[in-house]
Amino acid sequence: MSDQDQILVKVREAFKTAFDVDPQLVTMDTTYSDIAAWDSTGHLSLAATLEEVFGISLDVDELNEMESVRDIVRIITPKLSKKVQSDSRC
Amino acid sequence: MTAAAEWNFAGRLVKRLGPNSCLIDAATGQTVSPADLPRLIPAIGTALLRAGLRKGDRVLIGCSLSPASALVYLGAMYAGLVVVPVEDRGLAASVAALVEATGARAVWTEAGLHGKGIDLGSVLSLEGNLAEDVAAIMPPAPCEESDLAALMATSGSTGVPRFVMVSHGNLIANTEAIIRSQLLTNDERAMLILPLNYCFGASVMHTHLYQGGSVIFDRRFMFPDKVLHAIAQFGCTTFAGVPTAYNVLLRRSNMRRIAMPTLRRFLQAGGALGRERISEMRSAFPTIRFYVMYGQTEATARISCMEPERWDEKLGSVGRPLDNLTVRIVDEEGNDLPAGQVGELVVKGPSICSGYLGDPEETRGIFCNGCLRTRDLAHRDEEGYLWIVGRKGAFVKMRGIRVSLAEVTAKVTAIPGVYECAARAVDHPEAGEALVLFIVPDEGARIVAEEIRRELPVHWTLDSVHLVSELPKTSSGKIALSSVSA
Image 1 (cartoon, rainbow over the protein chains, first blue to last red):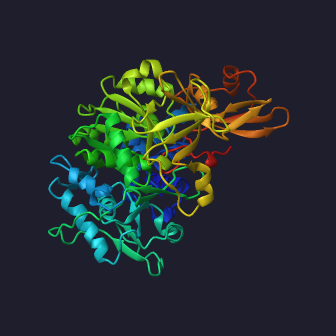
Image 2: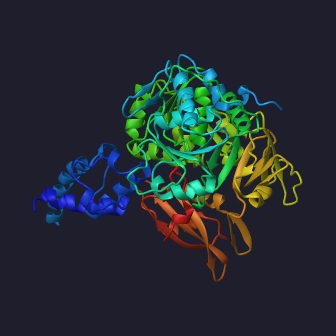
Image 3: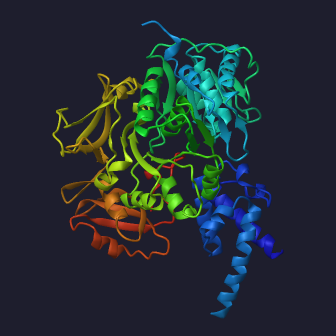
């Protein structure tokens, strides 16, 4: 399984936690228009879940860019590689 | 009194539309033009009557932030039907109960309910664009002032649906008073991120169209920068939000970097926004007028308005009553209290609704002799400005002293490092009751429960402090206290 696939699995779980949707229905092409619960409150809940699941923090610009699963994976991927580097330094 | 077309609220609104009146979906740019709007509303009304509905019939309208649901809402009202705006999201699951509770004869949704396994029996299921014949414009249905125009679900945090009966006369009186209080002109453009099934959202649409302006709908407030860019793109003059919306703007947006040269006013209602947050908004946008309003669904929408000129002296007040309302502050026996003393806020005037649908007992307790008992506790200062201090029943009694939960949240929110707070009371073996606090810290702030304890009055007993990243909110953005749990 590629790194991206592994990230997608965790993102799907975050969607289940935040929006109570079937993770199998969440694909890279899923956008905010596809999920009724993805409103302003839902978005913050999703962000909090992603931060917890991946151990990262998302800034204002990133929150404003997370319109789809593809965007989320794009934003999270470099953060994880930075995290691995800093973790391995410890 | 004779039924006359001029009491039809939507009829009046259509008559007042002008060359600046349009509806725009910000996400797609789809626009209902000033030429089409006054024809589409009556055309939709005609289509609803042709579908078999009669004056006074109730229509559930699944509302999303789009011109389509706004058109059906206004078209139904124009035709003399009673609109029941409800949240479109999750409607499939709740539609049967809503039909039962409201006696609706039809349900309209933008996408339709077919294929969702719903059996509505004899109730009409309508969808999409209903306007077939825009050439034959019918006049508005004759209405009496007291005729029912809408059933509005109360947006409380308990989750139990209850419908307030709103008349055409209520809507006209409240809309006109709000327009006067906000000095709206005929070139206004409202950015609407609040749904029409919430009375604050509906009132923003009513006032702007009634005054000949426009409404821009934007369902993308999860990406606040998009909404701020849309304000600039569509030349919006008004932004309306509940406290959560302002907290999101202050914390989760680049509002200080996005130019919004056309914006004239911020409207805030739907609960108390922290004084510090109001000051932050005002210092970030010194030239944009910041209005705080107080209201209830039972009073159609708005009751008072705090004009921006007096902020420096009146920070924390909800302003003065609208000019067609009389407000009293009364004690438990209903006696008037002098300035400065706290009592229940009671309102009288033409925008006070007639009661709750199918609930005469609750109606008798809240609405009496044309007055609304708001259950909010407030005092009035010498100049007539109202200061809400809490909600009847929303108290915690610690060591024999009653403290309102509103006072608790205001004090905690004022502590440096605290961004947002919710409080609730729990039983306590020594103090009788104690406080449970849910705190959203400021970005990067480290909050220690002991520090919070030190900042609070000594007689307050703290059971626990929970640090959370977000407080749960209702669909209109209010804090859902019932969902706050440790």
